[in-house]
Image (cartoon, rainbow, N blue to C red):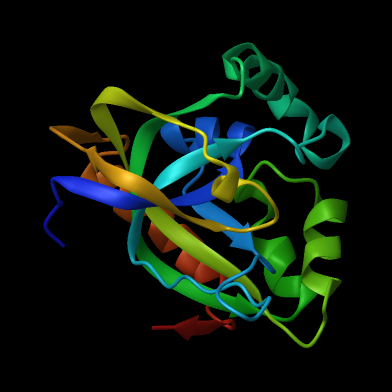
Length: 197
């Protein structure tokens, strides 16, 4: 997919996860719930988006010990809460729907969340699958700041930004070879899960 020059859409994600995605330490996100229009089922309705770092729900006990320093770093970055910094843009390359703990356990090494937390997300609203998305992450040439508006708050996953964010020249955080290697390992681990378009 060609890279766009601007974006007005962002996915809210824990700041610690945004950092690990931005460092190339993980390429997946786990999602369930969130609000889109009138329902409460999360959907990757956008194939590409900015990452909107959030701070209110992330807790040390929900993140693996080896990422606690990363979590601590995010609080140094959080600022006043009156503005949000957009540093990373993503394109979804693959999506899977998980309903079984064994599938989730096979990708435990590829994300920051504890197994206990990941299992709780899987079993919350059990009729709905847990969505795993593989993201190709790009770093913006220059971080773009925007004021945090009231409509951004609450338990919503997608944020429509009031104005276009200029993406400028972006650099992939992983080169093509390394991204294909990591995504190939994860896709192999999820070969029994349902891939979705």
